[in-house]
Amino acid sequence: MSRRSFPPLRGLRVFEAVARLGNFDLAARELNVTRSAVSHQIRTLEDAVGFELFERNHRPARLSDAGQTYYPVLRDAFDRIEQSTKALALERDADELVIQVYVTVALKWLIPRLHDFEQRHPEMRVRLSTSYVDWDFDEEHADVGFILARRKDAGLHYRPLFRAELSPVCSPLLVKDQTLPLEPEALRDHTLLHVYTAQEDWRYWLEAAGVSDIQPSDRIAFDSYVLAQQAADDGQGVAMTLGPFAKDELRSGRLIKPFDFSVPYVCWWELVCSAKDRHAPKIEKLATWLTEQVRLDPEIEEHS
Image (cartoon, rainbow, N blue to C red; front, side, top):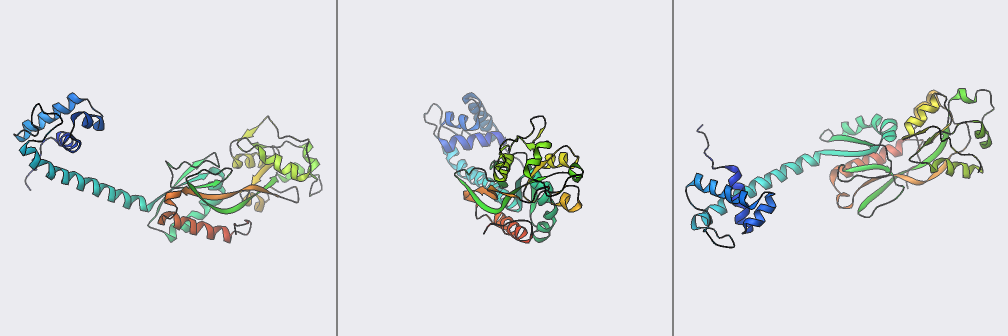
C-alpha cells in the first residue's frame, strides 16, 4: 500500500477551528494557545498545501476561494472522527460499571456476591471504587454508589435497599465470666470502640437502651466499621456493627452480640446515581440484581 501524504495535522486542527469560529482569537482561546501560534500554524499549513486559506488583512477571518472549498471537506472529516470517537466511548461506557462502595460493605457483603452478577452479565466490566466515607457519592468518578444515605443531595436519584441495624459486638472472651445477655449498664466496665466518621452510632444505641452516662473511648477510634470489628475480635473492646457486616464473625463465634436487642438506624443503605442516569441499562441491571440479593439475605430488612 502506498504511504498516505497528509499536511500537518496540527495545522489542520487550527485551520478547522479558525474557519468554524471565524476568528483567530476565538480559535486561540479554544485551543489554549496564543494568537501568534495560531497564525504560525496557518502559515505552515498554507506552505504545505501550496495555497492561501484566508484572505490577508481582513477582519473577521475570511476564507479564500481555496479555503472555502477545503473547509467543508475538513469539517466533515473532523465531524466523522468526533462522532465515531463518541460512539465508541459510549459503547465502552455502556459495558463498564464503576461502583463506589463503602469499604466495609465491599469486604463484608458485596464482594462475596459479585461473582453471581458477573455470571449473569458477562458483558459487564465492574470496577469497585472503595470509600472510607459511607454517605458521600462522587458522581464524577463513579456511575453508581452504594451508600448509607445520611443526607440526600438534589440532582441525585436514590433507591432504598435495606435498613441499617445498630448492634454492639465483642469477642466472647471479653465477657466469658458474665451471664448473657448483658444489661446495657455493663458497658461501663468495657471500652466502647467507635468509628469516628459515625460518632452518633453509640449515642443512638445507648439512648434506645436508656443509658445516658457512658461515652465511647477517645483513646482509640477507627475510620471504618471493619477495623472496629477487627479490634473487637482482638478483645480490645465492644464495637458497633451496622447492618449484616459482622455476619461471618458471628457465625464463626469470633464475635457475639452481648445484648438482646438492636436499634434500627435512622437511615437506609441506598443505591444512588445521577438523576439523569437513573434509567441507564447498566444501572438498572445492578439495581435489579442488588434488590434480589437483599431479598435473599435473611438477616436484612429490605425496603418495601
